[in-house]
Length: 334
Ligand code: X2X
Image (cartoon, rainbow, N blue to C red):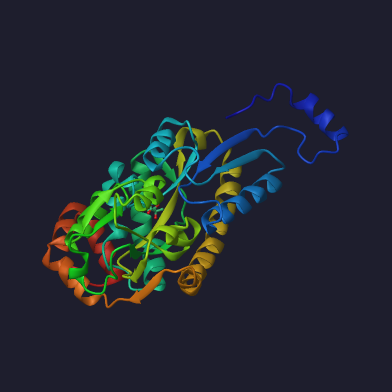
């Protein structure tokens, strides 16, 4: 929200006499919402960036963080972002954003990225540029760097997932997303689309048997309290785009846009490091909390997906241009 300059001269004179660091209310206040708990590195680094922005803009820009679905679940936050009720929202292109921009889900194709170098090469390279172009065409502003969520693992309360058949009959929560549902149907599970805000209680009440997320989320959201097994399926990678309401962003002078986006993109690089580190290191910690881990050979899972027609179906849906960009990084998938 923009404040008028009418009282600028007067308030500057007053501010000079005050001991407070930022005597003037911010000229721009943007709300930013996320779907994971406060302690997750996504929020830790957004909070740091928000402090840095306040300092470096002398209090002109105030980025207020609302973690853990405080402003609503993902579906609500996306509506609020579009209406301008909130200015910023971090969402995966594979999550509810894909209901608005279907091709954004392409980064979630099963078993596409074998490691981080392959992944960042795509998302910081041509594929990412293409996807941001599509998101921009859809009417949103999106920052250059995508924030890391991580490679996803499968937890459940029934049995370890060792081979594809172990998915049979298992009720797995996935985000509200056609690609995610298709992926888990292809693997033989019975997926249900739910916002992350509902996951803990859905697991606790056995509405679903399991869910899939990286260790950093399993830990931050305490999913180990309501799950028994964690199988290292590495079935896909996921991250969050920093999305901004276009009207709100266009109110900022260009130099302020550059300052804010620069600080956020730099914070994103630090977040990526910490997420990767946590996703590696947390296994021991989660084992100590009672979660039983097993490693998984991805080959038969990928074959099951192929046989189910997953790659052919999604190549057709995303179109050759996007698919070829994906395969430029990953190698042949379909
Ligand atoms: O909803 C999820 O599972 C989460 C938090 O990983 C995403 O945002 C995709």
